[in-house]
Every structure is written in structure tokens, then in C-alpha cells.
Amino acid sequence: MAKKSVREALRLDEVDLSTLDPAGRPIGPRNKKEAAADLAVTGAELDGLQEALYAENSRAVLLVLQGMDTSGKGGVVSHVVGLVNPQGVRIASFKKPTPAERRQHFLTRIRKVLPEKGRIGAFDRSHYEDVLVPKVEKLLTASEIRARYREINAFEQELADSGVTVIKCFLHISPEVQKERLIARLDDPKKHWKYNPADIDVRSKWSKYQDAYTQALKNCADTPWYAVPADRKWYRNWAVSRLLLETMRAMDPKFPPPAYDIEAEKARLISNDPLR
Amino acid sequence: MAKKSVREALRLDEVDLSTLDPAGRPIGPRNKKEAAADLAVTGAELDGLQEALYAENSRAVLLVLQGMDTSGKGGVVSHVVGLVNPQGVRIASFKKPTPAERRQHFLTRIRKVLPEKGRIGAFDRSHYEDVLVPKVEKLLTASEIRARYREINAFEQELADSGVTVIKCFLHISPEVQKERLIARLDDPKKHWKYNPADIDVRSKWSKYQDAYTQALKNCADTPWYAVPADRKWYRNWAVSRLLLETMRAMDPKFPPPAYDIEAEKARLISNDPLR
Image (cartoon, rainbow over all chains, first blue to last red; front, top):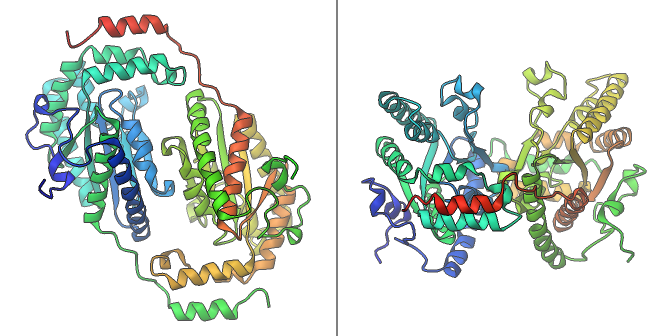
């Protein structure tokens, strides 16, 4: 295998979801055990990179997680974002907009929870819901949706300009695996709370959602999308962890130099001893 | 050893900091290895309790971390709060109030970042800074500080009444160990950003801060304080993890029953197959 990066391997250039295998493993570990070992090593490196990003205090990362129900957005937050110090993390999840939110520009609620400098943000759903649902449910005209695509491209460019590196992941799951996971939720009393009868209404519009995703991913591609095969949880977590790792390695955050004189501070520390 | 709980063992009843050993191990593991094994088991149980708390969506936990510089407030966030799913966590850290914050009631900025229902909140410093610093720096009169003690007691009672269980931890460190840790920060380029020359000014007022803590802990004791010996990092992390565990076990969060008919949903899931 050529030494390709995960970002190269998963980057979505031509958006044709029908050719993408949700159970694929285009790069990386061949089984769960290899993936787990890799994830532990990645976690340690990510933890160090995050501390430097935090100390540097000038840039941020934003992981945007999109995908159908049960594709594992929450799982990625738990297993990938959970690898680093929670102090440096900002997680936001977006549900159906409230009436108050609908009276504002659709990006307003998104802007409110952007990661601060030095932080890794994670969005469980995002501004993409505001072009997916209106398209499937015909809540906006085609021209209104195209306007939103343009606004999203401009918004993501603005983020890049302000030092926020956005990593957009489409967690690609098959309808068969979604069905298994929904049944698993119904079969386990500890998972009943995760199940919502409305999930089936959305599921019944599967191909409409795939079309809406295709349009959104094609039209909002100024910042690249990564297609993450999500039928295997271990592969999904591994892939997102590597996308985050490669991105942060490229950002190469640096611990800032001290803004004080080290030797003078040592001398003060000794002479100002409160125990004397 | 009697089967005492960690909450009983560390609960601060008579506040006399001079009798508390910052390197003590009043209960629990005798060494780092035992503590690490214990922490892993605790982490798994905490993760399950947190998921139930999140699913239940009616109560919250708030871990208040106070202590002198280098006592390990950030370390507890990383190593204890980091044990659970970051989705269910809300972390806030409080620095010196800004001019805008000083124009508001001192509890206003605190109220803004309280954990939502279902969450575990962690405060790295807290409203206690607003009685400690004013006392040491003589920014408020004795009567004004007493008024704040009363307001804090009322505020914490209000939290309890609204379903937020507050766990207040005083991370007790010795000035000798603080000195070692400050020197370590000066000796490691990756830690220079954590060092602030103003830390030495605070350190030089060590006994005044111990007095201010004594008064604050005594006067704001309606919600109990736990004194966590913090000279050993492994003991500190172990102790806080157990305080959190025992508290959450006592809260006993429950996964809610489904608000739908399980069999009917299974039937819908099969009949609404988008693949047909």
C-alpha cells in the first residue's frame, strides 16, 4: 500500500455516494484489534497536540459530524474527542431548531457555540441540517437552498480566515446497518431513551436524504468533506481519529515562549518563601 | 480498616487546615499502582452512571474544585472528568473577574455556566474565589464578605433544590510541594505557559490564603466540603474519582422507560423498509 494519508484517502472529490462502500476500509487497520492499538497511540499524540494548541491560544479546530441516525456522531464524540483533555474541548449538538432559533438567521445558533481559540470543537450535527431537512421536507425553495449553500461556503471560509480549521466528516452508513442499530436500541432497556419514533419517518425518506446530502456535499465543497465508512464502528472511530491527528500535525501548534525571565522567577521563588 | 466511605473519610467537619496532612492517605490505595487500577474500574462505572444521568435528564452534578495554584484542579478535570463521555460534561474555569463581570453580582457569571440537566459540571475555581481574594486583598469589608458567605449558602441550597448535587473539593497542597511544582514548570518548556509571575505574589500570602480558606470553608458549610490531600497527584485523582462515584451511586440515576410501544416500533421498522 502506498503511504497515502487518511485525509487523501477519504477526501470526497466527486460526490457520488452510490459508489462509496459504507463497510469499506480504503486505508488503515484491517481489524478491530489493530484499530484499537492504533487509537491508543493516536490518543497520546492528540493529547500532546491539544495541549500545545491550548497553550498557543491562537487557533482552533472544529470537527463537523454529519450522517444519518445511528451513523455514530455521538460515538465519535465519546471515543475520539474523549481521547483528549475535556478542558480543551467544546461540544455542541444541534437538534431541530426551536421557534426562537427559526426567527434568526440559520447560522446564528451555530456562531454562538464555535470553539474558542485553543480549543477543539465538535459539532454533533451542524449547519448542514439547515440545508438537508429543508430540501427533503420542501421547507425552502431551490433558490433559497442555493443561497444557503453560498452562505455556508462563505461562513466556512470566514472560519478558516479566523484560524479555525474545519474538518467535515460525513459518516456514511448503510440502511441495513441502521436497521440493525435501531433494532438494537429497541432491544436494550439502556438504549430505549436513544430511540425516537420520528427516526423511522426520516429513515423512510432514505434516498431523498442521500440526494440532499449529495447536493449539500457537492455545493459546499470549498472546505473539503471526508467520507467516513461508518458501518463498522471501530473503523469509523479510527478514521476520524486519524483525520483529526493529521490535521493537527499539519497545524503544528507550538508551546509559546515564556513572557518572563526564567532565572529571575526562580530567584523570586526562592527568596519569597512563605515558610521562612 | 473499617468500611468507611470516601465521603465520610474526607468530609470536612471541623475546619482546621493545620491538622490536615496534604500528603495523607486517610482511606484507599497505598500506592500509585493500586490507585491506577482502582481509577480504571471507577471510570467504567462512572461512564455507565453518567449515561443514565444523561438519559434520565432531570438532575445534574457539579464538581467544585478549589485549591492553591498547582494543587491540581486542571489535573482532576483531565484525569477524573476525562473518564466519562465528554458529551455529558460541562467544564468552566474562572479567572480574575473582568471589569464587566465586576459590575454584576458575583454569582451572575457562575449561574451562566451551571451544568444543564443530565450533565456533570466541573468548576476549575468557582464563586469561592469571590470570598477568598477579597478577604486576602482587603477588597471588601468583613461585613460584605459575611454577606457573600450567606449568599453562597443560599445559592448552593437553591442548586440542591433544583436537582444539582454539588461536590465541593478543597485540594489541599503543602507550600513545599507547590514550590517543587512551580520549579518544574520553570524547568520544562512545555510548561512555561502554565507559569504566571503573579503566582508568586499569591504564594507569598500563603498563610493569609489558608486563613481565608478556613473562614470560607467554615462559613459556607451547609453543603459539605471534602478535604482532598493533594501533595500526591495519584491520591488526589483517586479520591476525587471516588467522591464522584459515591455521589452518583447515591443519586442512582435511572434509564427512563420508553415513551412508545416497543413492539409497534419494531413492526414499523420492518414495514417501512426504504430498501424495498
